[in-house]
Image 1 (cartoon, one colour):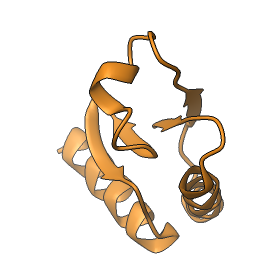
Image 2 (image 1 turned 180 degrees about the vertical axis):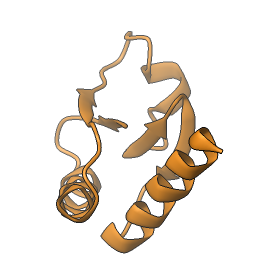
Image 3 (image 1 turned 135 degrees about the vertical axis):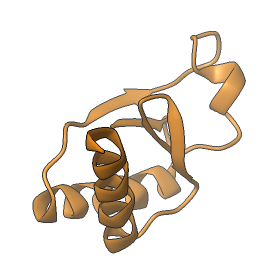
Length: 82
């Protein structure tokens, strides 16, 4: 999963904690990227931060709860193995 964040973002801090809680319940790879103006992610996601992406698909923006994220990650992995 890619977690897009930016500097001074309270929602990002809250969402990242939910992501970490989800990883403790259902381990998955995580890459945290802090976007900034001018980078490849900025134009597409600056107004949706925080954003969670799996295989390029947005699975959440703004807010996420740990249990909801676990469900989404499990569903995504089951779809990939079916």
